[in-house]
Length: 328
Ligand code: UDP
Image (cartoon, rainbow, N blue to C red):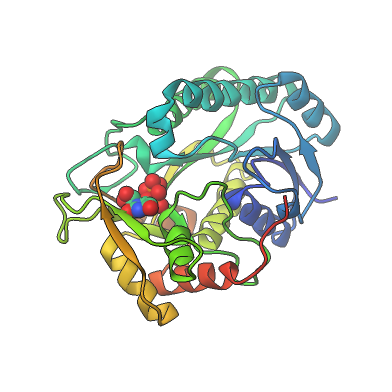
């Protein structure tokens, strides 16, 4: 029988790609999702438990029924701007949900935990290449809530015997190259899908959030990583835990940053169409530049990003944008 993995947020963008990667590697993903931002139609590689992490009894029941060997925890509120407007909700849902999940894992004897953290835990660090050792100083509630969960994992490692792999994602983009999964948020807030919507005429224009940052062209710099490469890293992280190699933290980015203007230029090259652009003000909570070091994930985890060029990510997102998308 395949080893089971409970995937919280498995109906969402990154979680669904992780489920596909897990299934391909011979695991059985059990999706636990409240479908607040995820899609039933994105659950294709294993069963769905529709439940909320704020409800401990539902988590206990899912762990008792499926007896997973590990948990991958994707489910979270994840929008920087929104987290600045409603910080309490981010702390309650993200930290409260993770706490319920960890306590349920400790009680059920689930000893392996893969956690989606973020480069937003670093805050604004003057454009230095960020490594696993860089001090974390979040500047928004989203990053703050994720850092709190990282700290919680350290404590549960000591007392609850739960080993963890923490992945700090940089900017995840693209879609499944075979078109089986992709990005669909309501409302959409992310750069690449919004830009492609503007290209396709589904919205009037892309607003560039700030052109006065201390970067080469004044727009924010981010390190974009393909969602399928990210999913592959999760399978490697899971295997590392199951091999008993213990706790670890890995940054998942490419080591190369691109400005908002560079992303727009790359889109033009992929789609052969202009991006209608409006220049706007800064978005609260945005750091000027966030770029990852890749050394540790490549050397210690054996991660080999295959599709994380801007051209490939925008190309795969563009192909996904031509498809009908998930039904509610
Ligand atoms: N961005 C933008 N216009 C948009 C959405 C995003 O200029 O409509 C910028 C944003 O300020 C950031 C980058 O694009 O510098 C990536 O933002 P996104 O929301 O995709 O990801 P985040 O960095 O918040 O995780």
